[in-house]
Image (cartoon, rainbow, N blue to C red; front, side):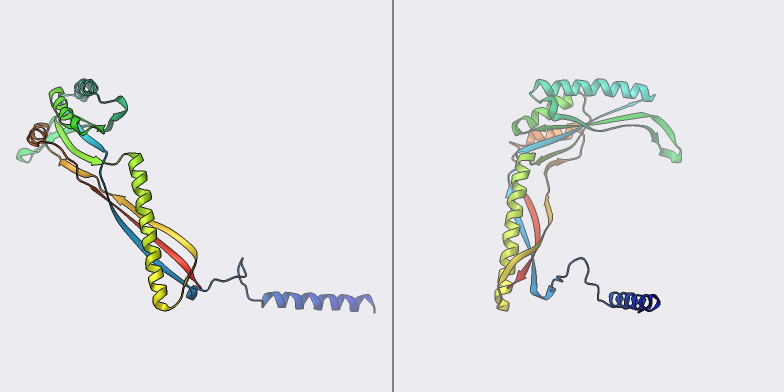
Length: 247
């Protein structure tokens, strides 16, 4: 067999191989394609009650002066006095935090005309405590030191208690998902197999607000009128979706 015939045969063989590969079905990176008809999914939900172990008081110092520098300086003096007073009643440095600070021109629009009243500086201080008996004192020393507003008093969860509450809520939601899937499978006359996927869709809780927005003296009067400040239980919610194989 001469070299030309051998070359022709080789070319024909190569063409055939290319055609076979071209018409071979593509199965993707894995040769195993899951059959979705053999799975069942369920979403579990949970609602749990947790007592708050932490409170936050949001105090705002406002100053209005002719110039921005004057407003800023006076606000700084009052804010320092507020923070010093808070430390005297036992609030730690780490539990006092400035969360909003702003300086802006303040205008009077009465009579349809714009008139510059001055420059307003606002400084909002967040005060945390796990001793609820201190809440009245926090408001008192804040007002006496120059706080203009109490934006809110909230009860919430510390990081440690929230982590525990989240774990409990997700465990209950997961059990609820399995129970729902087992009930559905039983109704269909089949049994659950291994877990295919899990998705923790949601975890949430809303802090309890004892007081929401108002002038400092109003907040002080409301606190004084309350025989004692008892926080309400907080509701935590979680949702988990699970997909099971069926046997």
